[in-house]
Image (cartoon, rainbow, N blue to C red):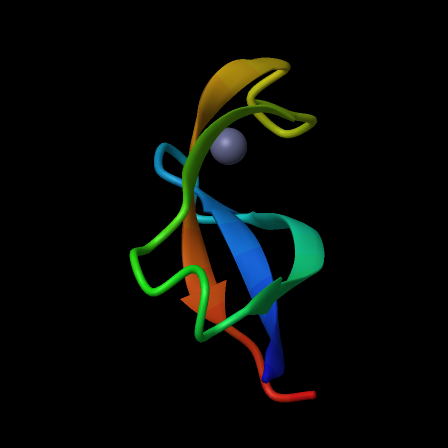
Length: 52
Ligand SMILES: [Zn+2]
């Protein structure tokens, strides 16, 4: 089942990205280094659930 997720900046708590993932094949929480426009640098972003 595909679910919609958001990627939230760990530093400023801004949700900068949203994507889909398969909740059966990716059961662990995603954590990625992504560019944050608010911080103007790469920060670690963690998955949060979004209502689709
Ligand atoms: Zn940020």
